[in-house]
Image (cartoon, rainbow, N blue to C red; front, side, top):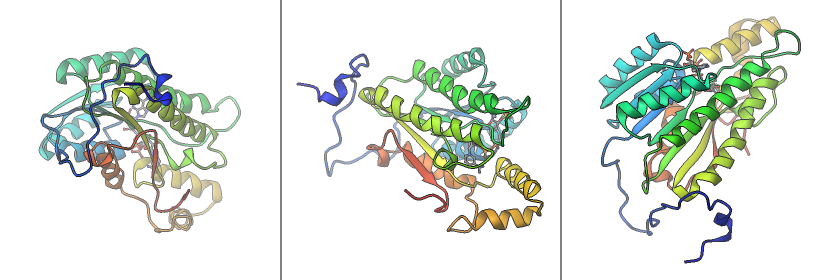
Length: 287
Ligand SMILES: NC(=O)c1ccc[n+]([C@@H]2O[C@H](COP(=O)([O-])OP(=O)(O)OC[C@H]3O[C@@H](n4cnc5c(N)ncnc54)[C@H](OP(=O)(O)O)[C@@H]3O)[C@@H](O)[C@H]2O)c1
């Protein structure tokens, strides 16, 4: 059968796509055997919430971040939630050697990878000068995430079942914020990366998507509010009020709200979704 023209450019990738589900055909509701899910930055905030949400499916989890003590806490909580097995390893995503090793170890513990949730990242402002954090922000959020995605690809389970790479980007991938050039550039870069990899990997039935959260109640958001309060010479409570005045729903999202969207993206209900940035921002940015 002749390939559609749009796919012929990706001919280096083997096409193992299974026949699409026909309308009305029964969809499986749960993976038949545990899926191996790697989650970066899983010791805190959004990453921990995602780990606990996905633990409930009886998954094999591999949790990576620099601070192992916090990963161990997530591990015990995830086992209580129902994870079948949990592997943790200290890994600085800015160091490619560590990323290569961590994915190799994870694959040797749990087998090939079905899903990567590339959540690890740093926030905060940057400004020109000797202490400009621009490079660190790009190195962590963009290059570190890229290294993780390539290692997930290197250890990916074979098809034809869908496999997933999900990146946690940000509302700042969509809009500019003064003083946040590094963060905005790194997160906007992730959307380009997601779109290109979605094209590269679609013929293998690998879905690549991003989630773009707005304010989410984690340490990172609270540090952001404190910086905002300091910069404006107001209290943190006033900064919260000011920030939420830009959010139609009037409140921060919870980490679990992001976890729920990630859960949906890797479910059979999202079989047609790839190359997308999904917004969860209380209405703060609308297309
Ligand atoms: N909270 C928000 O309002 C918000 C909004 C939009 C997007 N996000 C994004 O959501 C993701 C999670 O953030 P969060 O809010 O949950 O904040 P968080 O609690 O600070 O989580 C960030 C995680 O990334 C890990 N990390 C940072 N640098 C790393 C490195 N070099 N190598 C490996 N791991 C690293 C940290 O663990 P270690 O320190 O142990 O390494 C930490 O667990 C981030 O990508 C963030 O940009 C957050």
